[in-house]
Structure formats: C-alpha cells, structure tokens
Length: 533
Image (spheres, rainbow, N blue to C red):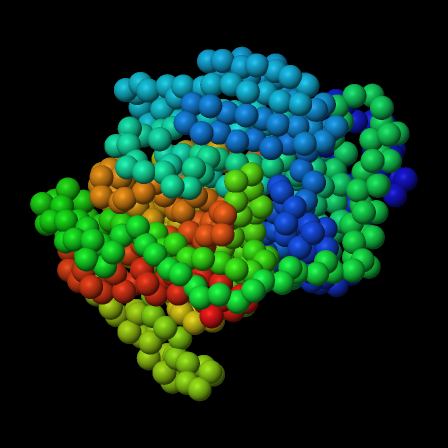
C-alpha cells in the first residue's frame, strides 16, 4: 500500500486520499459491526444495510464506530464536537467558515453556536439560499475535497435529520409535546468505515487520509492502523449479548383508537373543504423492551428485509429501522441526478402455509393496480414529487421514469414510482433536500398546509420519524431513506410511530387499523429478540 504514501506526499491541505484494502466475498456486515461496536452498545456507532430485494437500491452495507466529529443541532443551537485527534484538527479548519452564524464559540474539541434561520418573501430559488442550519452542515460536509472517488460512499457525514428540521424553512404551528427530545439533526463524520458491495461480492476496509497538516508519514501510518483494526476484528470473537429476565410486555399509546378516528374525521372535513387533498396523521406506540437493541434490529431485518436498514447508537438513544422508501438521492460527477421514489399503496403477499402462492400473489398485485383509492393517492404523490424535483432541476429534465411499479417485499407489495431530474449546476444536494423535505408520503398535499394540520392535530412531536437517515459525501453525493418502519429506543422503552394516508373516502376505523399493521413488525421484533412474554 506504499502507493498511497506517494499520493499523500503530493496532496494539498484539505485533500482526502481514500486508502482502502479489498477483501473478496460478502462478509457478514452485522457480525462485523457487532464485533467492533461491543454488540451495538458503543455510542456513535452506525450500521447501514441493504437487503437485495430491489436491484439498484439494495447493493451496499456499511458500518463504523469511530467517527472523528459529531454534528448536532436543535432549533437555533448547534454543536460540532471532536471525537478524535483528527476531529480536533478538522474543527480548527472549519471554524473560519462559520462566520455567517449569529454566535459561535470555539474550543479545541468543540464549536458551539447559534444560527437564526432567515425569513424573507423572495422567489423559491432565492429562498433556498437563505441562511439556515443547512449551511452549517454544508460547511462540515464539503470542507475537504477527494482526490478520487473510488466508490460511493467512502467517507462523509452519516446520520439522521428529523421531521421537525422543516422548521428551518417553513413557519408551522408549535409542537404540543416533545417526549423524545430528538435533535433536529445528528451527524457523524466518518473518516473510516467498512463497506460491503453485495453485487460485486467485495468488502472494502477504508481509512481516508484527510490532509490537515504537513505530517504525511504519520497520517499514512494512522490510516494503516485503522485498516488493521478492521482486519483484526474480522478474526476476533463475537461479543456475548447480555441476558435478560423474561417479563410481560407493556404497551401504551399517545393516541387511542377513538382519538385517532376523530383526527381522521377532522382531516376528511379539511379535504372536503378544499384545504388539502391528502394528509398523513400518525400516532406513537410505546412498548417495553427487554433485550439487546442489536438483537431487536436483527429480528426486524429478518421480519422486514428492506433496501434501507439502519442502526444508529446516538447521543440520547438508539434509532433503528427497516425502511422500504427512499427519501432523496443525489448522485453524479459533473452532472448530478436528483431522485425521489414515492411509495403509496400496499397489499399483502400471497402467502399460503408460509410460502408464496403465485396465483394469489398475482391477484393481490392486480388488486393493487386497479384499486381506485390507492391509485388516486399514488397519483397525487407522483405530482407532489414532480413539483419538488422541478424546483431544483434544470428545465426540461424532470420526469417520472418509472410510474406505478409494483415492488414485492417479504410480507407486502407496494405501488412505487420514480421521479428524477438533473440538479441545477448552482445548487447542491443540501439545497435539494431543503426544497423537497418532508416527503409527501409522510405529510400529504399540498405539503405545507398538510404539515400545518399535522402539527395542530398530532399529540407529540415527531422527532426522527418521517425525517431521513443517510449520508452526504464530500463530493456532493447524497442518499437517504425515510424514517419509517422504525423505532427509537430510550431508557427501557421503544417508541414506534406509524401513520396512514387520508383521502376524501378514507374510513377512520380502517386507517387506525393501518397504523396498527405498520407497527406490527417492530413490536414482533421486540418480542422475538427475547425477554418478553
């Protein structure tokens, strides 16, 4: 690997030299993560996986436990904390780029400050460039420049953006109650990670050399040490999970059946009055858990294999899930493509005696394709995605390239469409996220009016539910999933959120049942993980 040292000697301060070792074969990503994260218990550890259910959206898995920086923000406040020596060096470089903040203090291992989002009555294009916390994320995400892009992703900011980050951009009613205290965003800068390409059947152990000074030999040695640590973990022993005493599972909710049905009825009134076309109210189910969080995640990924599966041991809890739906993807070199893939419309798989019956499965698929309610709801969400993508795309490049496709998962099949466009050259992935959040499948249409009604009727703040998990790379690529089919573990409680899409002919009882169905896999995963009767 001496060739990397030669590249380092020629590199400039601010460059990233991706250093990696290739191992043939698909290594078990969860097993490797368990080894390096003390069975998922290590703070700031992260695992992103894909089940190869849908080609193109299920090809990569990655994990890391030693980020160099943590970036968090809530409302006006933000904090960038160094977690390693490299993180301290990066902080020193970043501090000079934060002059746009309203307040900032710098210490060797932390930057704290305030940024009050700007509000002006200007055009949509100008509005995207007004000052928000996206500018703080941008200052960290794009500070270093890669000398090459061997694969996606190789380093960058990985983490979660909450649903309530929308307050940076829109004036919405205040939340009634905040029981989880999730930040608006929590990202980790990963300079090292393992990456598994399931399609190519190769595993990459990556330790990026991020050039902050002229000590290139030590930087090279540190990168090699990080790669060696991953290699050592591969042959190491799997940590033992803790044992838990069995107890009865207790379940409660923030919104009863009667209360949720009242919300649905109220939303239908707004639809009939012409205020909105569709809306997605949600409710929280709170359950005891009595098992290792990583075991709960393991059971969820078995029950609900998905293109986007995630486990994040955050500052104040653990966010985990198995989501079928992309939030936003931006990829490309000179010309970047922006992509949204709405899912709306669900039928069960044709399962008989634990096996797929092809005839029954195709009947359910046909029902999905001709269901007037599902088609009407899906058409509205395609239109919403087209409008969102058009805001940040070059004229004439936005189109729906995959309309009304049926994607099949282990227990359900979904109606899916894909909308894409070419990102305007003067904009980046973070502008695109700002323009498209929150996704219509979790809000409704028109989006802002639907979000106002959600705030007025839902009992508690959504937090990460309905937001996004994913990454932003230094060269401007972004891939995120919507936080659904997920839970947030805090204390000994699992907080599971589920919603239903309401249109003019929705039946309140049916929509409540829909929320119960969506929470079912998470509750079952908790029970199967052990320790509960």
